[in-house]
Image (cartoon, rainbow, N blue to C red; front, side, top):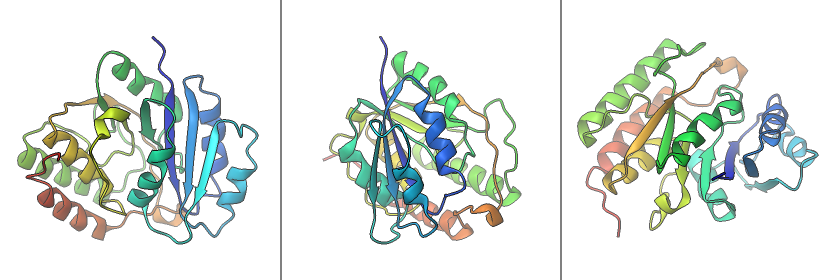
Length: 230
């Protein structure tokens, strides 16, 4: 059975790439719903999204100020029209064509699938500090939650929408990654992983995540270690 996919794109000042990302997503037949949350961009990102020709697929919401990735996903979720949803960054570090690989695992019965950058393919352009930080965060998460994940901080997280029933997103920024993962694991879900390609970019090209976000991620993992759905 064919499954239609909703894509959430949190975006802040990505005028150089958002048009390309939307063009690629619009050509994929399984994607019928794209929600772009413009997190108060100042570089014309919103105008580029508004000018996209495939308006029937794309919904755009604009935040009045910059809140962060978690807040953008929280804004987008009520607008999702399909039963499966995935997060897509707006910077082309991940290839939208590989979303079909994650969707295949969903179709095979998985509830949650992550695209891991460390499964088979070597991640290109990834800063050493980011690679080290991600490995440390993932190892700490595995130790704390009894899992065997390889890429906690991957952007590509795909899930059946019912996996978020009774869940509320608390964090506004990049803490969303450990928060979602912790809550799913503590709710009894198994997280499958599928290898994906990755082409990183430097800070000068607009990369947003900073070392302080790693410290916040550690605190978030510790915070939800005893999480239970209400």
